[in-house]
Amino acid sequence: MVKKLTLNGQWDFIADLDPKYHDDTISYPIHPFSQPDADRRHWKKVNVPGVWQKYGERYDIFEGVCWFAREFYVDMAEFSNARARFGGVNYQCDVYINGQHAGSHEGGYTEFVLDTAKYLHRGENHIAVRADNRAATLKWPPCLGYFNYGGIHRDVVLELSDGPYLADITPKLAAALKPEFITELKSALSKFGGASAASGVVNKLAGGALGSLFGGDKK
Image 1 (cartoon, rainbow, N blue to C red):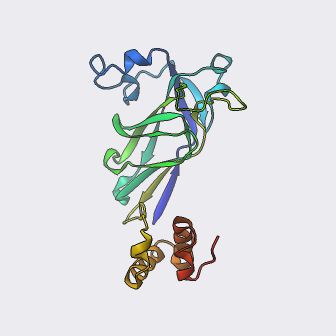
Image 2: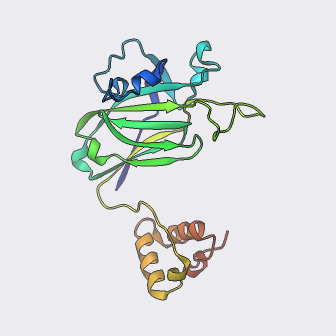
Image 3: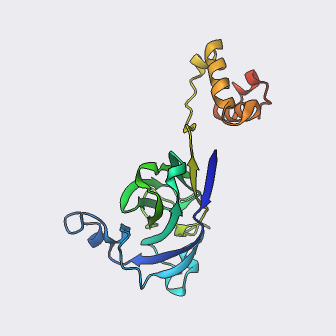
């Protein structure tokens, strides 16, 4: 069973006006904004998903580092696995669960998933996200029709499950052509959504090369 807990809604938000100072691991071995006991009395209440250009006129053309934080409740006694799924955070981000660094991601328009089970506990939990949209030579510049938005601009969902889950598949076509591999892969995928879903997954991963072996249509 998989239970999905949306983390969309109201978050606390603040712009870090001195990220170089706060990122100094000598002065701050643990970033103060990432911690559950951070003083958020003067943080702004904002809606997620959203971009900080819509949070106030002062952020209209702001490029820099901003922090988002909120609390949420979960009963981990019922679940053994937990994954935080972010639809998109522009551009580079770090995610903290209960003050511990759970992972990072670069790419403002690509979904990413973090394994968060070991950071969660039963009851109230805390999540903080550091978002950085500063321009760099390898990032798209805010010109030629592209605007450099910043923030958590797509859904955030916590997925809880009480059993094993399929995290990823890396098909190798040479091995995949062997009948025993095909049988094992079909069996494994079918457990997570049936033969039809198995066909669809493999079709996307292998560009249709394996999907037809399961009776699926090539895309």
